[in-house]
Length: 151
Image 1: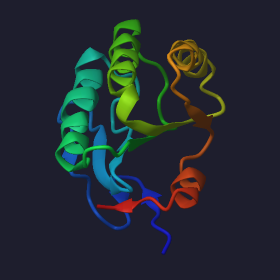
Image 2: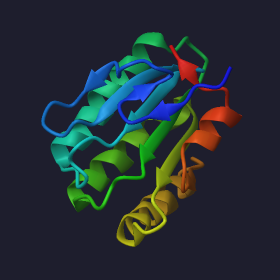
Image 3: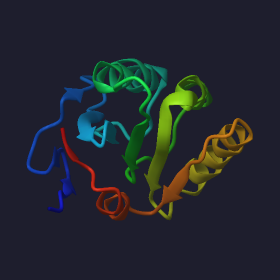
Image 4: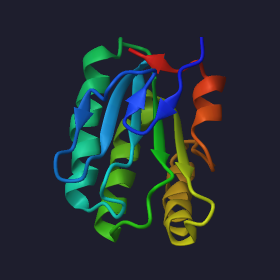
């Protein structure tokens, strides 16, 4: 079965967590991991990055069996920018969970040139640390390819 990500709903379900100030959304998904989506705030700050890296990771940690790896899917197609401090928090998060990470996928709008440039800087850091990262224009093909569904 194919599960669609729409504005604020995944497979017809509301998110498991929502950052109150920004509207950023997080869903628990299977295979074990999370799916995030930009909310009302399209230029997130450190508070949003910390929400994703703390509360989002807590969802993963609560469900990830020993010896298995998690997947992280980010629908950030509405992102127009972010602070360098937010990028630093997100990069540190990825490095921290690297040993237990199967994949990280980020979807960015084709016109988000500045965002893509910043993500490419973070991607280089992560690749040097041995962590692969897929970046595309749409999240749905990746969700379909990996059989992602609400948990």
